[in-house]
Amino acid sequence: MNAKKVLTATLTASMAMGMVIAAPAVANASEFTTSELQVNIWDNNQLAGLQQIADEWSETSGVKVTINVVDWDNYWTLLEAGASGGQMPDVFWTHSNTAQMYMENDLLLNLDDYIANDDAIDLSNYYEGIVELYNSDGVQYALPKDHDTIALLYNKAIFDKYGVDYPTDDWTWEDVRDAAAKITEAGKDDGVYGYAINTSNNQDGWYNIVYDYGAQVITDDHKGTTIGSDEGKAGMEMMRQILEVAAPQATVAETGTDSLFNSGVVGMITQGSWMINNFYTAENHEDYAWALMPYADVNGNGQCDKGERYSAYNGLGWAAAANTADPAAAYSLISYFCAEKGQLEQAELGVTMAGMIGVSDAFANAFDGMDVSPFTRAEEECELYFRPYTRNTPVWEDALQQAGGFLDAWQDPSDPALMATACDNAQAIIENAIAAE
Image (cartoon, rainbow, N blue to C red; front, side):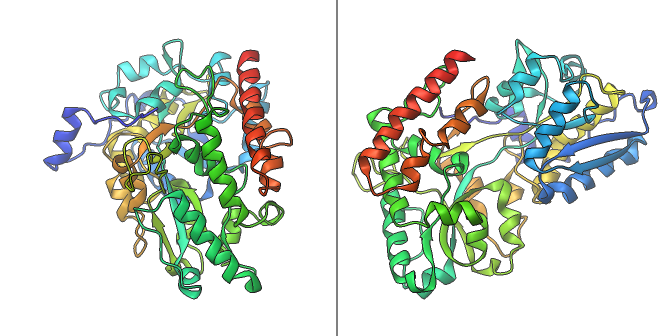
């Protein structure tokens, strides 16, 4: 699905003319009944910037905001515990994996009336896929916090050491494979590999190659998959060829792709814009550079045509607990994060790209000395598709990473037939999971 949308004429005009962006009003501040809001997120890289924005809201509202960072696994465990009778945070991030279940069970605050009375929020100004994700039966339960894209990260020092040309915007997946092979061969005595990927790296990894070759992990109607098609198998066959010359899965499982890269033993990985700061603050970040995602030259004409270069995009939502003690204050904070001023500020601070269309250009300039423009350029130079999801995404997503899914082919990439069988298995896994939802 190409989910790329054009910003409304009003917003485009205001941006082009350089108009002053007014801060959203903190509506009914005198009616707030709480002195503090508890906010949960899972990414420590975003904490400082988000706290800065929240503190600005606090100056006007008089309500303190405490942002708690909980690691990904524990985040969902604690949220589920709160939903089962404990105390959920007042405001928190929600995600495509679990949003539908929380919305269907009335655990999130209905935002419709608040949005209708909020001049700072017009849902047509946000990425459509993110808006739709957090809407259930016509009710909006979260506002788009951000969106993200994927790019290729490479270590110039490794490429230089082994005499391999840097990636360019014209690189195909064959180019990635060939460069990875050269680095892995030349670096074998040093324990250096040309590429690293893990079966769990889906949105920021192998999902994209499936779409490049013309298949879909989840179809646009969220009711099927074409991963077992000839196109899906062609994409995963290319992934298999790359895996043959990449870091072994035993090594990846033990250390992780990001750590391997930051340790200087991997030449290339693909990664999402939400992880830039992890590499920007790394010891050897001067050696790191980003490039557009490679493409699949499916028609063999030697150039990237429409439909041959994809980047997944996803977007978190700011939601509030249905039973928050002060829903007006909770929504006011959410609105402040998601209105144009807050969206622009998070881009300028390098927190993440915006959920509002056309407000992310500043993000490309937020990391002094590191060119991260491939992430913003992806909005125009890649086909964007929304991260595949269904009503209960973790069921099939987790199964794809296990034995009987793609794990066997990932661990033994020498056998093309094993990867083809894995695609057939994946087709059945996804279809069966959707049927049971």
